[in-house]
Image (cartoon, rainbow, N blue to C red):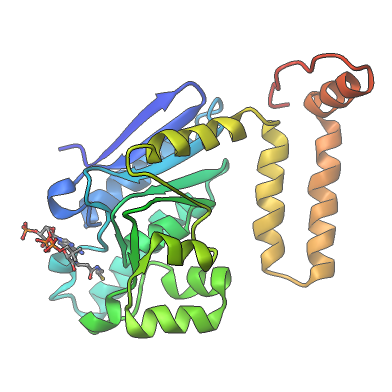
Length: 259
Ligand code: COA
């Protein structure tokens, strides 16, 4: 059975976790299909942006599969976390921008999957939480690390210690969500944002993404050096020359070529 579906619309791909009867919970089979799909998409030279969502009207992803985790030994749990990390890392290090389109529950591993995307767009019905401590565990697919980097340790402690659920407005106020839409327009809006990004210069987008994330792990002055490197690389592209010459000559810019 296909648990992860990929559709391509021009230069944007839509990846759907498709296990709605289990609220798209991440079991080993889903993680394997997700990793394989991301490997294929990352090699697609025409792709300019990726939207990630969950099938059905109840959940983005309701977490890692609790049935599969219930009887794990410590060693097996470490290996399950390793598979989760490696899979979700394929998303966080995806070469082009990624947008999570979240409707319904994004819990535990589902919240972690969304946090690995560059942007989260939420429907008004989205609900975010880390229920793990109520199940006797910590988040294990990157939540303790990515949430605290995004919103700071105090908000991360609040959400992870209490397990309290955030609605879309609360998530927006904390900077976890970029935009809220109606349920009906969520996917169209996510695809629209992806298409806007797809219309920009691909090398500039790729380099901006690298500069933002690589700069987070170091001092400001090292980060500025990283920025200079990626900024100056753009001046080796035809796209930069064509776009700037068109502006200076008051001409219509040519479509970007990605080089
Ligand atoms: N792992 C495994 N199965 C899950 C799951 C998860 N994380 N989340 C939901 N499911 C399954 C349920 O077991 C149920 O399967 P069943 O129909 O075979 O019994 C199905 O999805 C529907 O969920 P159900 O609990 O019946 O729906 P609900 O509306 O009563 O509750 C939730 C929805 C999301 C509140 C509830 O499913 C829940 O709390 N899920 C676990 C969330 C969680 O703790 N995630 C972090 C895991 S570390």
